[in-house]
Image (cartoon, rainbow, N blue to C red; front, side):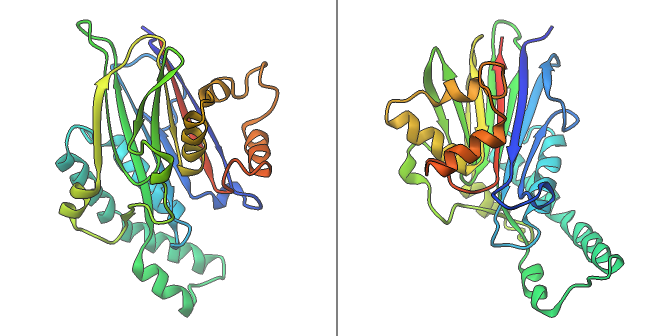
Length: 267
């Protein structure tokens, strides 16, 4: 039984290539399962690597892969923290691979890069599980740390905004997951958790901070931002996601940053 459809959109900041993108996303169970949803549940994850840290994109991708495949990560704070620790344990091998890659292409790590590598990488993360209808119930759960956000739209109205509910809550220093920390208690204190029910016709929009801020700002001034996102790259829309993002940037409506969106339409 098909009970949903998933679309993923992503583009980089101006002047960057796709290889330089510091956003990452996961659609489970394999990580690239866009299109029809027919399994028992759907897992999605979005991470936004902090540009101020080295290898932020690699860390964001590792977080999405680790959380995308681990069981029960949205069930509790403890499960989220345990999965985070598993991701940090895999960071040292990832760093070794990076150093080797640099050496093999004749561009070894320079002395001025070593402090940044020692500090590690940082990223936001949001993970959501949506469960197939069973016994008349339609459930979803989400866990997040930082300012990547989830929006639930029902009957042309925003009914859930998580973990940020007001545009003023966006700052230049969001909470971040570090690649080199093992402080599970701090992670459990900083993460947010949400659970509720979904209904046929609902749509979820999971976005990194630039698009999330655009969405909340538009909603709070009385617009319906989901009408635009619902039509992305359809015949009615008339432009690619990247072109629309650049248009909004030129209008001053959208921050120039890597931008990722997962849209889930439920039946």
